[in-house]
Amino acid sequence: MLEARDVTVTYGAKRALDAVSCRIVPGEVVAVIGPNGAGKSTLLAAMSGVLTPAEGSITIGGERVGDLSPENLALRRAVLEQTPVKDLPYTAETLVGLTVPTVVSPTETGEIVTRALRAVDLEDLRESAVHRLSGGQAHRAHLARALAQLWAGKSLGHGGYLMIDEPTASLDLQHQRSVLDVVRTVRQEGTGVLIVLHDLTLAAAVADRILLMRDGRVVADAHPDEVMQPDMIEPVYETPVVVIKQGDQRIVAPDYRSSVSQDR
Amino acid sequence: MTATAEQGARRIPLIVSSRSALLFVVLSVLACIVLIAELALGPVAISPGRVLATLAGGGDAMETAILWQIRIPRAALGIAVGISMALSGAALQGLLRNPLAEPGLIGVTAGASLGAVMAIVLGGLLAGLLPEVFAPFLLPIAAFIGGSAVIAILFSLVRFSSGPSMATLILAGVAINAIVGAAIGVLIYIADDQQLRDLTFWTMGSLGVADTRLIGIVTVLALLTFPIFLGSCRALDLLQLGERAAFYSGLNVNRARMRIAAATALSVGAVTCAAGPIGFIGLVAPHIARLMFGPGHRVLLPASALIGVILVLAADLGVRLAVPPAEPPIGLATSLIGGPFFLWLLMRQVSRGRVIA
Image (cartoon, each protein chain N blue to C red):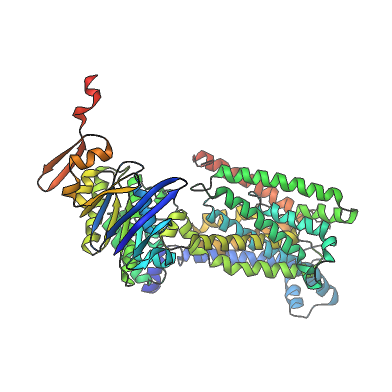
């Protein structure tokens, strides 16, 4: 289990996270949503171990994240940043194999790399330099890198967690879909996923549980059906929304009908 | 090639490719040729056969004296300079994720120079205070401290930006070089005539150092950093993803950065205190290596070192044979070749829209 207990992170006088608690069990997808500046990325940074909280504790599989070396942490969780470096001279397959620990045998590394590239549908471009790929392709290559690290950790006998920070920010629909597919695949393998999302419809579709945040606090931590209600979303985002139910899918969108622009 | 080796090739494609292996052999042969030429050529030419015979102990008194007292120390220092500057350049470029980082341009060499000049001019004051054993190490230690100080300043400057920008680094280098230039000026002003002569030639960079004990010390120090650099290959590869992603991938970023910085300060300090500031090798050698072998540091670092040795020894040969028996400083030659190379690189970066990012 990946767990944060009463975690507080401060930037100067500002409390970016204020006594936040949350937990992710293996095979569960938790989506973090909230307006800009709510503390979503800070929560992910704290849970990934890159940021040390001022108060509270973060544990992964019962071990304190702060006590684990970067090497050991990397075996237990993989992270995809919001804007990974695109200007890289490496080929896609070199990039994907780069974060596989050297203790994994070359044969197995090769297999993991191929599987990861296939999972993001980049097998045809495995020998292309990353800086020559499109933005979406480069992002997918980095997603494959995180997957390869995750699978390498699993092959070495560690539990895996995947953390993804706003993967769909600048990506088209097809790519958003591929992120969704990857998250569902690793979930079936028993990986716990923490994913920060701007797109509420995508969050509703992918998550088992949704963490709604505002001003560094958790406003709601519940099933998507409970969180995706206008009376939950509207006060947090300070904007009217409509929630449309279509089959078992919930589509959440801003309600533009009440916008002042209509009166112009 | 076995199946396992093929998988290894799959993993980091350049490591066992036959093209790379061939290029490595070619470079090694080239290095041997310039090394033998460095030993054989000069005011008194000694044939390669006689060089080998003398090395084996069968030369006459004059050949033995020329080789062991002049040319071998010179070649050893050249090798140390080539390896140190090339590895430091390649490692700094990887660490700072900036292809234009070079010990000279960003001020590390200047810091080491200041340390060395202070030791030359003010060393007499310290000599009485230090135990006798430390005396031969005073110059390398002072240069190491100077280089380390500059690296510390650079790191604190770039610490808070997501990636050190070209502008920050170059401007910091301009400032550091200016400050050091002024400080060296002050020291020159107070130096006596003999020190002045020593300093003037020293600041132009030369392999013609008379003190063979100093050469021995700096060569050993420079070679000691070799395994540290080679042990940092994976770290440098991962750092290309950015520091945060490198941490996510399992790299202890702070430790890796300290290790590479210390190795750089030590090796630049060591060769600079003996040979003076020799510019641009740290820029040119890694670039040639990158063009030949690609970006993976496991191949890039040893290739850079080999190319660095070839460049330094060839430049030294060039200046020694240009106007014999006079020996213009080698630093002039490397800067004459390296300066235009840097400009070309800069223009290429500008045309790609990548400079001052």
